[in-house]
Picture 1 (cartoon, rainbow, N blue to C red):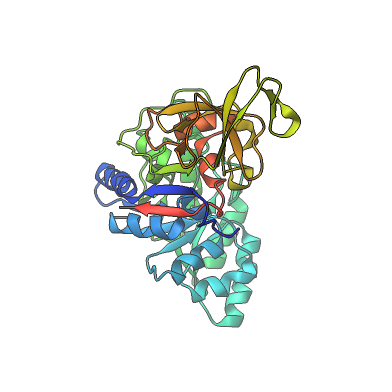
Picture 2: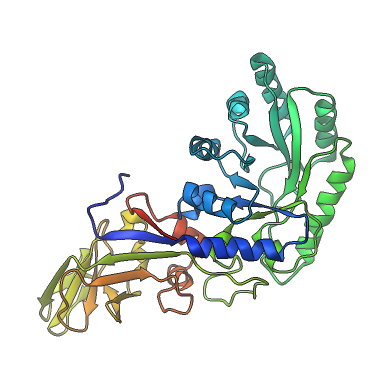
Length: 375
């Protein structure tokens, strides 16, 4: 989508909050442990390049993304630090990744064999991180026999540089450590099968780091914490206390684009799901589900000026309507999402209303919403 720069609606990102969160994590880490900033999905909706540069300036030493194109975007922005693609890129793209000095995840023997042929034909070497499925059930090696065979393929293989070995925790954001400890045990078993020596052994994500999980790791893949959000935030339940201070970085703002009075019996929105029972003032906000403002937010209260007003009627693709306490002028400021974690319209409150997690809310904010950055 083209950014709608001529519409009064934008995602505001506080880079000072990003810096604060990265600095807090760096001070929290054991001495010698690196932090790689996870900026996949356009920096969880905050803007990958801007977040990456801010995180690196604050002490991060590497970056993680989900797909190869995200890594190439960072390289094209003149970012030269190590970049790891956490997902499985097609083996046929191994030479392309190598040409950009991008590290790929290797999760199976078949992938390594296919990539080996591509690299041989291109005369290139690729940095890889061995992905271990220790219990996430998603990607990575999980069977001893296959992993031993992969290890054998990599021994003295000039087409690969084994930069790392990692796993991803399924329940690091839970106070129950039973399954977490099971995953640690499985990972260590796979690590003991390895005869080659990766540069980095990394297990910790944000949750494992800030919730006091005692795991030795060469680097932490710091993701949702960069953006000041607690990784244990689940719908309508309290979050676990973090060991570092997190400051949310994102807010979503707009303005009233239209204001009118309606009378008893007037409907609002598709299906006329809201009908006035009295004379009422209705304001229109030029943001809709095409921007990631989901239809299920009907009834949620957004801040209009200094007043929290309910969304009435179904949210449209490009607009939604609110019931105002009185006539208010066109151009009155609207705050859909507040960066203040104590505000009624904070990001967790939005997620709770939808019945999801704040990760999803920020990632769904579409590119039609311009990103504006404050230091």
